[in-house]
Length: 312
Image (cartoon, rainbow, N blue to C red; front, side, top):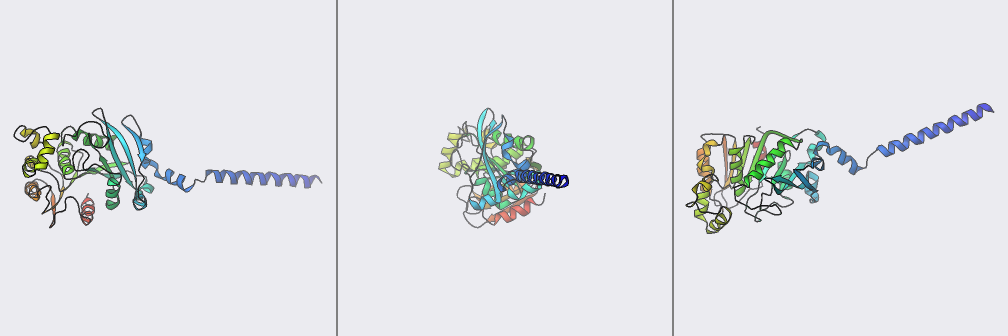
């Protein structure tokens, strides 16, 4: 009788232990969403909030883009101003949990014309595939504080973002750090590379490289430049020279990929031609041209861009 009671007690204890173990196992197993968050590890951008980086908000992307990357809007401080920015991280890198190379993209336009949209960095990240894409809205653009100076103090916003990439975002590998830009963004890219040796590669699409020529060729650009820079080339030639890579091409010593359409009506193809003639003597420069009037990139350009970036 005692043996039966003892066996019954041991059986009850064993069943209790099995239930406790099962409950703990079930509790420890994350849901698919929780697993995804855990797997993001060093790429979990919300963890990088600080006095310099804040107002972090995940971007609601289209299903197609959401499969390829995760994007965030955020605010950072530059010269005491609150500057808006975006970052997109490829989904394919989450499992690696290792720092990834980066492209800093400089958008074109002036003030709110040409500003970054929610899908801008995500679209670039999706077609490039294996690099993080980060971009500044610049001061005076969108909800950023300050005034757009078209390559004046707003260049500091680009340099500050590079600082954050190097010192704050531990998931970014600074090796082969690339700056890319379209139109006015190409101008910003050349200027940043002249000033900052951390930039190791340049991609310039329909880029402004001779602001003197841009001023003379389009009446609407005269208005834009007078309003943002505050002077004409005759009144302040130094302001135009520092924004014109054609004037200091020999100071660019990193590989450059130039993409420009021959019939571009916004930024003359002749600017790209003239700069290429100077750059090819001082650095490794690749020039891709198109026989159309597209201002910006073509879809097929990204095959070339990926191959060119893989030369790192």
